[in-house]
Length: 361
Image (cartoon, rainbow, N blue to C red; front, side, top):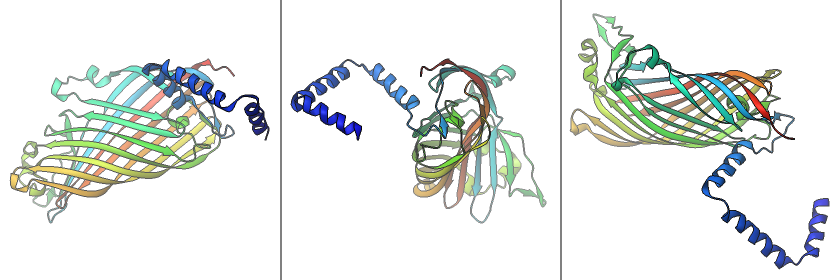
């Protein structure tokens, strides 16, 4: 009521037209005075630093800056299955890649550099090297994930099923396979419903602290593009002689658009400790193009599948020092009438650091 009385007195004290004109001119002048970099900075501060949540459930950040050491392990796995009368399964994955880095944070935004440990301790030529970028933004209400991946040719066979010789299953686990290359890129944007009591940053960017256990619905949209090249001729001879025609494709390209809805929960099981889990299934529309050895069987298709995005984190954070682990995994499933493909990739981070530069009250 006091605010309305104040506004009423102010309106009667000044002419309405003059007040409106003066305010509009001031806003226009401020807008003209800001270049694109200033506007980008203001947006970042608003996105990373703005909060209107209940501080009884979430403790706001107390420092401006962060230093953190982080060990990251990227993982990926591809499973190809025939669905016809001759059921066969092939699963491929490279050895995990590891990175060690140091990062400087400002208001929850981290920049730094990391070293690929595989390059230091193994001899790999240029064709084996891969490119992977994962960017995860955790805002109070809106979050986003971005990824770009280009695999090397250092895959290994991890599992086979449906290949028999004299009623004995073949075992090619750990066998090198240089016939698979994948390129993928995409993004996911989502909204956190119970943002007044639930904090994603507390679990995954350490900029806030969850004080009381709470959960929330999470909904979003995703877009991604996938390109998989498969040279089945590189398979071991024992598998190649029995390989179903359904799995003798050369290339799969597909666009994936999905709408996802899931649930996330932050469990505060002790002072300054947090265990977080989130599962977000998605209904995905896929438009694809398949190229086989015989151009007669090349086809385009449109179908609906299920995808998944999962997150998990364990963190200790007393507002000064923090340490923990977090993981984000993406699962894309692709089905055709004669074969299916599952693409599973993600990153596991183990980190420790401290905050400094205390905020002014």
